[in-house]
Length: 215
Image (cartoon, rainbow, N blue to C red; front, top):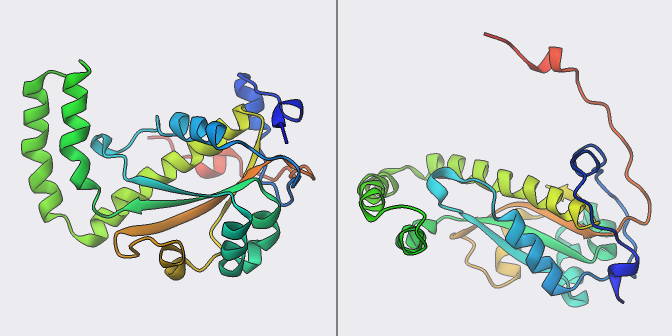
């Protein structure tokens, strides 16, 4: 089905941020094309990351077979999985340092930084990644994948779609279930993507006076 008649894109910052809701049930008739999902992922991937390492990896589950498989691993979130147009499983790549030369080489090639700056960064970064503990690497990568996940949900909203971040699934099984190396690709969250069949509820937010300390 052509979704253009059912969704409306927006550049209104307040509508994107303040009207975003976590949606529980989607309209199963709305199918988002892979081309548009790719656009959403490209825009989401402009999120910042530590020394631009971009450790996030996306598994887009949009086929009926894929969603049925995922539903068995996410029984608590089964309705979201099966009614959404797609579910994006966000992982981090524990071996993302393999891309460091490409990232910085391309930055020089595209004129984003001079070669001597690239060399200085790599001289510092490569020993750091060679010595970092698995726990510290996980902390860094979870922060970065959290940033891209939030940006993905806001970008989806700008495209006229709704989302819901989900932690309730069998994280120890999802990589292997979809043919990924479970040691390398570490699960972070699922994000359902589609058009709401029922609008999400607003929720209470603690006042800034409660959550903020000034110094």
